[in-house]
Length: 454
Image (spheres, rainbow, N blue to C red):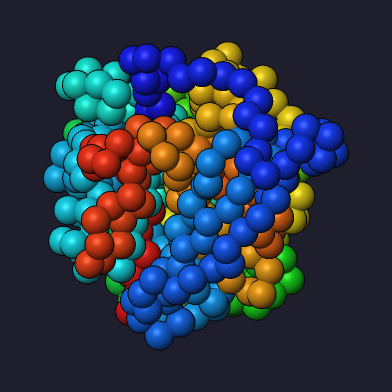
């Protein structure tokens, strides 16, 4: 949620001190005209430092200050996480979030640093909680759905960015497909049955399942591959995204391809705009089982469908061929344990993205206008194999517009940048120091990215 100040700041093009009008005319707005160089403020852990730099930017009067936490990408001790700020106030019935201060949450979980998440709709849920504008995934569990620019946090403080959405995973058979309704159970809450185009997956190796004649089961072998790379079936299945609290929010149901009705699904994958879907391939037993026992193989799983359904027929056909496939996360996203919604990917491939994206509300983009701007927060990858968590500030709660912040970060070596909520909701905290914010007081927020050192 990006809040406007009560009194609008003057909007205009401020001529930089020390530059003549003729000289200034040759310098594009958003260009860094001078800089102090990064100065180390604190070493938080080996390879993780807080640094600060002061810059002058064409089109803006007065200095702009950037403060960042930086680390080497691939540092095995660094972990970025996306999470609710107050987990106890998360409501799974509508994926809503309570607000809290990032400094309190960070201290409670032993984080080194934290930064605010994307914009949100304050008090928009039925119980008065906030609704995020996009996806939130923590430890491969889904807390909020949305289709928007997102940043995925992978191992060693690495990141993947893109506009994406979560879509149901479907096992593809010879004559159709089936989604995954449940894990390690024979029915949904309240005794509800799986849909005719749905499966349950049993993953506990060595478990003996008594398959009644109401069901059909098929064992899937250990050996599997994803995009041609060998792995295990259990690894692929356990890496699928699942809802943190399934069967609670009725809006999570999807349209059945078999009946046209709504049904619960509890296995999802990342689908990125212009992304490349990875295909997982599996081998199976040569016969399906009904009215008998089946054992979950080590490294494998057992698929179960209701008898006399499209999914059961698919399992029978799959047993005959001995194989099936499914599309999983688009390339690069399987390693993302956490996903945080972003307002806009400001830099991609080292190039600042400065074309207005056509939002109905232009305030987050221009925020007080060129020459004044807003406090801005972002995460980034940068040249030199660096990761950044960065905030930009100026006197009186001013800063930069979003396109000019993008230009500045690209000039400083950022290769990919995801921007978050700005202005009065920008919040940058690190252990042992006061939070850096727009107004000198720390706002409350529903979601945060934190950096931990393990």
